[in-house]
Length: 287
Image 1 (spheres, rainbow, N blue to C red):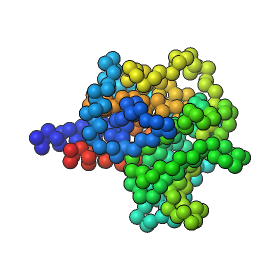
Image 2 (image 1 turned 90 degrees about the horizontal axis):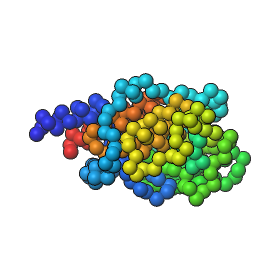
Image 3 (image 1 turned 30 degrees about the vertical axis):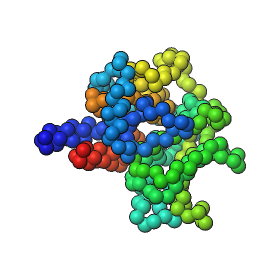
Image 4 (image 1 turned 180 degrees about the vertical axis):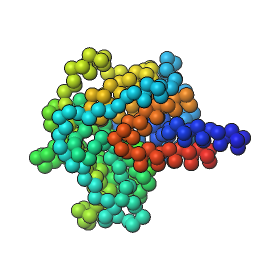
């Protein structure tokens, strides 16, 4: 038994599988959608039962090697800001929060009026976390959401459909703040980035169906191909959102996690992917 378990751990770690992505596309959460990668392994069994009968469960590592995220040509210069762990406990590291963005020097793009935002926590925290989406020049945030005691791992949050959609051609600021000091908000660590909504490129409109697929009964390859088409068109947020819907609960779908990791690594987010690999290997070694 020990030998078999050790082999399983080696395979999982070597393929860079992220446990945190194993429920994407299967949990029908109320908006805004928030996902934390530290959920228990018991979800594996339940989500296996929900796999579509026609899901394509095969590795596409060869195809993935030829896929690349291509930054937009006319990048909108915006500087991402991170304030470290000032104002919080010394036990919190400066790399506690990592926004999953393509660059710190320009705004990532989306075609969605209600995009999904992703970030990563390197350790659990006991203080609340606040997400905010702001349009420059407008005093009130477009959307705010407080997340109490978030756990470590990948997190995602979608702008709810009942909120006004982002306008094409405009750039918005989004941030994640740790509320460590309620009396001195300026001392709270805040991590800021930007998102720009653009029109769907004409070439991409010809490649993709006019109606986006839904979560139900969609073959794995459909979401994977859609995600890489977005990435090659410079649409970072759309690429991550599509990749997050790829079913990954079945053991045959471990390569799908590699696609998500490959996308992050292409823009230099290797610290996140390395930690996720280690976390998966550690949890499975005690499973």
